[in-house]
Length: 165
Figure (cartoon, rainbow, N blue to C red):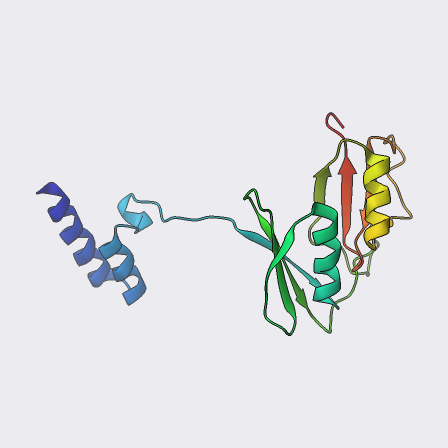
């Protein structure tokens, strides 16, 4: 009986104080103002590039993940078959590669992946074979056998590192 009273109270509150979307949240029991937290799940990260297909092919090769969706024009998705966060790639004709390291007045990186590997040199070789490259600038205070900054084909920087680095 209490549950019915709470639902009625939540619905009345939502109808009296907010839009239809909040009313729907109250009816479903997901109105965070009423003490319930909505379901929120991080599913993917989207990277822009001039060529979404080429960038998807690079990361598919690097991680061994299959392409799971595409819109046939300018968007591709790959997913980890073991679950976790996937990657989307979308083409944008206005895309500018980030500058690494950052320089005033130039496009800066918006995201940087940290990729755990068991052998930095072997992983860096795979990156190059897949179409990426080593960043010209490497952190001077880090051992390159433990951490290496790489660039994907669209110029996004990412780090290969070994456990403990």
